Length: 258
Image (cartoon, rainbow, N blue to C red; front, top):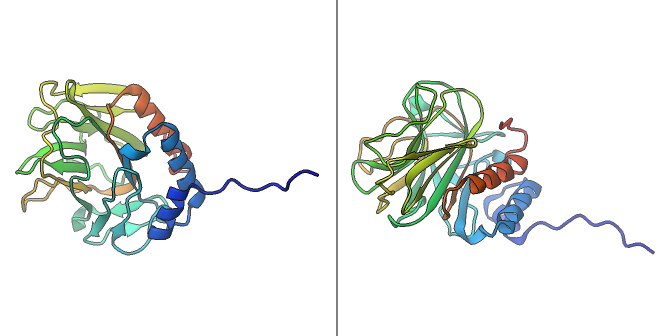
């Protein structure tokens, strides 16, 4: 006699995150976590899924998920949870503070950070994610810019200028000790400031603005952020494709990512 059908159980780490955060989209979270583990990256990954069903969905805490550590974020100045992600209003200086070290500390560390987002306006400049270097400068950022391309920025290491359009996109900015800072936009890779690696130190990490570890926080983002993912790994075309596709097929289902 055949055994009755039973649905695949939720991954235990995904289940623990759901219990901690109150997230209700257990199936998508479990599929994403299992995918990261299949890639052998769980212990090297931390992320902030920001769709309301994939995190707290209320309140001011954005819970982190991943084996790299706990880096819960704080919604500041009233961002709102929504089905597609957290909405940040530029005029209200809204952001999600992730604290020191959320995007890495050691300057020689290999690192990759993705943001999945949809801007509501094309006012520029806008920082989608950034991290300071312990002084009044950024060590890297993903920024909306007017020229509709990615280009090098001499002043800051690893600043990725994302295409200025109001559509969903997934952008990776990464670093290796030998290659310097660079960024992915889809399948295209550009190397920026090849003589400069991320000078991470004691920098503050943030979603939604320029956070230079000084009172002059500026360049606020205006739009939705569905998720931010950090992995301690060399940024490569294959890694970018794996993570982009995994997010699109699990946590990012229905967003209309290209």
